[in-house]
Length: 206
Image 1 (cartoon, rainbow, N blue to C red):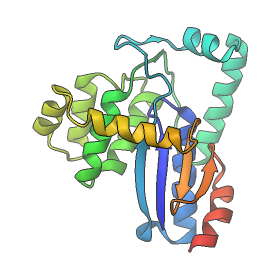
Image 2 (cartoon, helix red, strand yellow; image 1 turned 120 degrees about the horizontal axis):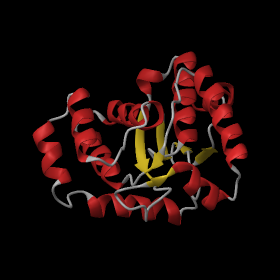
Image 3 (spheres, helix red, strand yellow; image 1 turned 180 degrees about the vertical axis):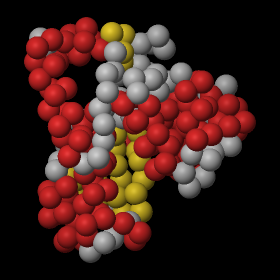
């Protein structure tokens, strides 16, 4: 089974969706036979490096009050806890393009899934900047990637065109919200669904 997981590190529902998907794959007993690839999508492509206050940004982008945003955070905390992911405080929203460049490289090195998990935890659990070079380099080391090679990527534009091309491709085929999970290039599951929803759909592809 081939699964392309289109998502952004900055997307909380992508964390819920990934952990739900992984739980479903484990329940189905197909975890080892699945090829899972993370594809890039940026929720905030024009976000400057210094980021922006999360409440102010989300209120402006989605037209929601602080109270509504707090309710959403509580829903996310409960949904995350149900699948084994812990949401902490996320005070700012940051640019994630460099994280996507490292994820692209990590795929070539066979460590993409590990880096994706590390990035989601760094941002959504620990409130760290997933675009900061020092954070990215530390996470690369934690998942056994070559830190020197990671530094050379971050110091250049390497893999920028490849990531942009992947982003354009998924936009052109109709992906405008994440997470979007594409099974065997033809079946789409959208949103941070519960494990049961993934199980029901994926059972057809066993």
